[in-house]
Every structure is written in C-alpha cells, then in structure tokens.
Image (cartoon, rainbow, N blue to C red; front, side, top):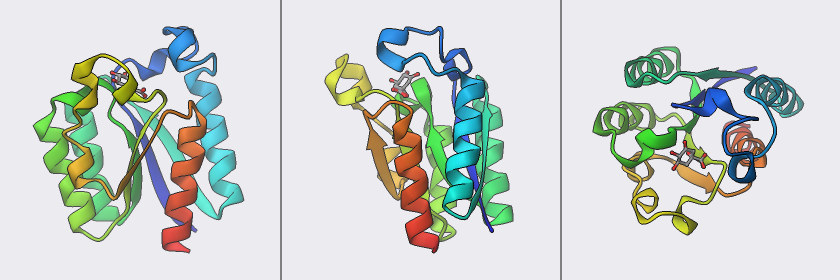
Length: 147
Ligand code: DQA
C-alpha cells in the first residue's frame, strides 16, 4: 500500500472551534479519522499530522523524500510567506513524488494576502474551497496518479 503523509500547518489543530463559519465544525481528530478511512478506501495508507512549527513541516517534507512518501499539505498561513517550506516542497516534487496543496477555504475569495501562495508553484496541483472534502479530493488525485 502506498503511504501518504497528510500534513496540516499552524492553527489547524484548532479545527472544529476555529472560525467554524469558515473552516467548518469537523475537529482535527475527526479529520484524522476521515483521512485514514478515505485513504484505506483508495488503497492508500494515509496519516494526518499537524504542527504549528515551520521546522516540523520542513523536516516532514525531507522525511517524505527519504521515504518516497506522497504528500497532501495544507500549509495554512505558511502558504503565503514560507520560502523555507516552499523549498522543502520543491524537494518532494523534484523527487518525482506527488504533492497536493489543499485548503479548506478558497483563499482567492478572501483577504488579498491569502491569494498569494508561495507553495503552489512547486506543488503537483492544488485543491481549494471544499472544506474537509478538499482532503478527500486530494487523496483521490494521489490515488489516481500512483494507482
Ligand atoms: C487555510 C487558508 C489560509 O489562508 C489560512 O491561514 C489557514 C487555513 C485553509 O485551509 O483554508 O490557516 O489554509
């Protein structure tokens, strides 16, 4: 079974209570269970991790390269300014692995600073605006590419 790392950036651990009108009422633990179930149904071993720390996310991208693991990444606010995370993501796609950037909301329909993603240019593709279903769609994209 192909492994997929699903990585969530800062403040996403607060899902369920963080601005639920924007991000929905599904908690991070519930999302973790859904990701596992969705992945299994697609023949993927998908594991969700979350960190508020840029260093963790950069290291997880390095680990993904070393373990040849595909990645679904919601970089959260790091999307808009983290060149370190962008460079780490570039290593993933340069290794021939799939990296799907996901967002719960559609950042292009929000404040103007959110319409800049420094990650998109090195991602395989992006899925935005479908709430937690963005993650299911991203896993489907990975499954289709690796299947
Ligand atoms: C987000 C969008 C980002 O702009 C924001 O900083 C987040 C969540 C989303 O999933 O919609 O934390 O990545």
